[in-house]
Image (tube, rainbow, N blue to C red; front, side):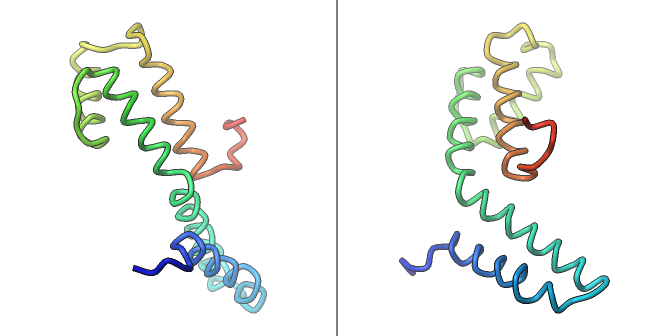
Length: 118
């Protein structure tokens, strides 16, 4: 395992290369695909930087809501099942806050400039 550069530094370096060196040389559909690639690398960088904390916080909220443990994916499936069956609803303490925080965290990673986020 390499200590330096980190995955985040590698992703940022490739994104910066695409944005500053490659894109100015490109035109048309190739320039568009380069922009898509740079945006995808930005999402990966934000996920590497903030995703772990967001996932840990989401896990803790799900455990508190459901009273059981599992992976975030398993707990989300269980939450959906409970909502679908009517066992949990918007009147359930903490559910609205959990849904709002989880959505905000995901949008901050995927689309941080989304106007509705602020």
